Amino acid sequence: MLARYVKIRDAIKMVAAVEDLLHRPIIHRQAVQLVNKLEALDSVCVKLQSEKRTLADVRLLFDAVMAKYPATSHHLSASARIVHSPVFESAVVKLLSDRALTAEEE
Image (cartoon, rainbow, N blue to C red; front, side):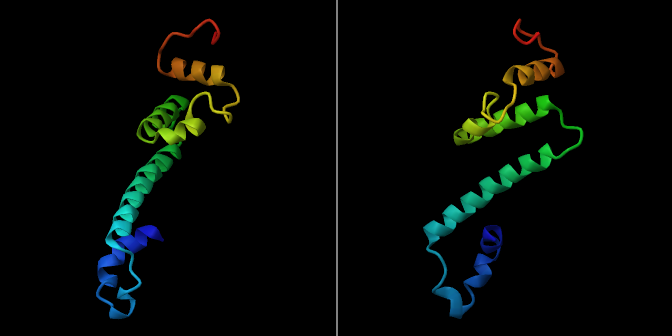
């Protein structure tokens, strides 16, 4: 809905009956910035749905999201509470990336 508002705002400004209901320019700029961030995150969601996606690919995507949006690190890090076995995940990612395993991961 927010994306639709951003898309049609210029046309809405032409309608006198609703002109007074429009957000101030600063609110509109914030809405545009939010839509841009949501589109970027949506592209990550689409990439995650690929059938050929590996755990190593997912870790790279999550690391990129955490670098851009640090607030997500609590939920997306390899040590997040949702990860059942961080050691297992780390080992799989390393094997898929052709890297050496630590003693704990073997």
